[in-house]
Amino acid sequence: MTDKKIPRVQLPDDVRLDTLAVREGLPASAWGENSEALFLTSSFVHPDAATAAARFANEQEAFIYSRFTNPTVTMMERRLAAMEGMQACIGTASGMSAIMLLVLGLLKAGDHVICSQSVFGTTIRLLSGDFAKFGVESTFVSQTDVNEWRRAVRPNTKLLFAESPTNPLTEVCDIRALADIAHANNALLAVDNCFCTPALQRPVEYGADLIIHSGTKYLDGQGRVIAGAICASDELINDRFAPLMRSCGMTLSPFNAWVVLKGLETLSIRMQAQSQRAGVLASWLEQQAQVERVYYPGLKSHPQHELAMAQQSGNGGAVVSFIVRGKGADIGRKNAFHVVDSTRVCSITANLGDTKTTITHPASTTHARLTEEQRLAAGITQGMVRVAVGLDDVEDIKTDLLRGLSTL
Image 1 (cartoon, rainbow, N blue to C red):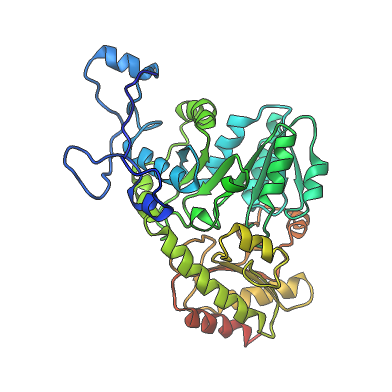
Image 2: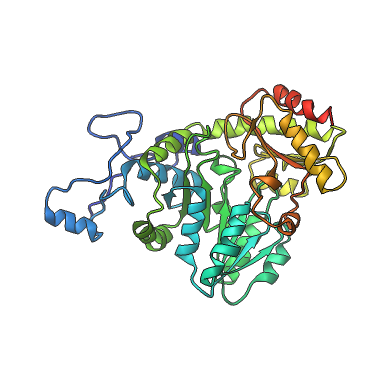
């Protein structure tokens, strides 16, 4: 690479997260725009053939073709990397494509990955089914039992993968302990930071090597686009993931990148406000006679409450799950459906991270493709309901849930 590089925004070295969230990216164009430009172009023009050849050979850093280089996407990548405290980031078409890129970039046939059994259902399917066909071995362990992770390590273990908190049980892993296990065995630790985002939690500070995001959720924050990202070191991004992106093209579109980029500007205030509302709702749900159990890291009753408060800047996040009373799977499912169907304010959708509060039945939506055995191993029963608290008035959400709870 020559000294010709894509320029950076000139910011003081000591600016804080909220400033990075509105300032980091690329310098303004010659027009001096204050709001970041949206570059809707498939390709970029070169001044001559020799320059084009140098750029395609990676001898010059430049924008070439939007499958793998685009100014708007680069702005989003730089901003998210800075907020996560990482050197670099690569945007992807979705959160699941980020996990696919992660596995393709790091693992080969015969390699072994250890994964929490409580992660998003599609992640389990991707590792246990799709990549198993190509010889990648997976072991699924308890999210919270560090000894299970340690015992699962093999000579061919290359990656540990966890969400923290998990979807939908909000289980919290000890990121530092898992990082120590990974590094002691020449493996890497990847943490899905979708639920907390860098506004509440920065896994790199606890030793994580890679951070995964579904930008579809809180990074966008208003349910508008599909997006994903991997944050990691310059070496991993440039040597492992960027060449694959260039070949495979699980590309983040410039428009979607721009939407996420603008969403990052309000991320901190949204996460604080939504977490505060979720805490109020979780405490209220614990007092309801028709609720058997509430899962929320901000509650003292949560098994990993102290760890969550330490890792998540004293915040519980914005997702609350609870089990509706009812003996047996059939009754549990019927009662959960009744609570969901009785709402008039909450949006019945499996997405989360929106300013609008959403409600879903995980066993029949987000984790429907798992076997009942896999769901129960993860603690997901038929009576569970997940609420992703938005910016609605929390009193209205209480009233909305009470419509169903009070009429069971």
